[in-house]
Amino acid sequence: MLSSALPPGPEVSFSLFQEQHQRELSLLCKRLEELETTQTKQLQDLGPSREQVLAGAHRNLATNKVTREGNAQSEDYK
Image (cartoon, rainbow, N blue to C red; front, side):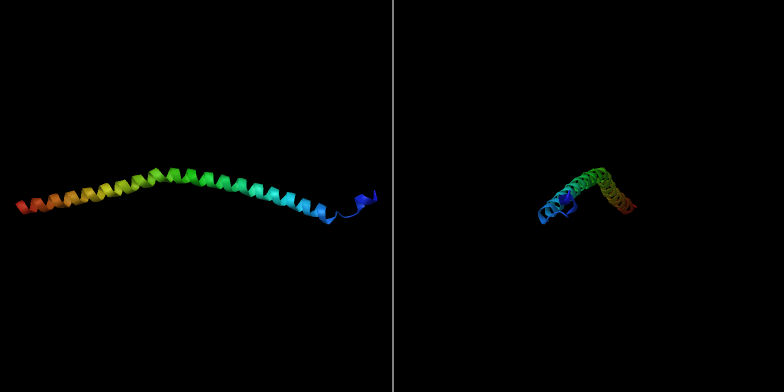
């Protein structure tokens, strides 16, 4: 009974510290994986929309250029 009343020795304290540290590292690694997965999904969700916006903007520029060229040719014929 006397031994249970004594504070743990340095070996036990260090071992407990290592176990706690290892648990924290494991939790952090798991959380990091979750965040990476979430980020990847978000980027995939944003990817097509962003590409569509850029493609739409490019189409609009091309359409405006063709329209301006058509208007310029019409004025040449006047």
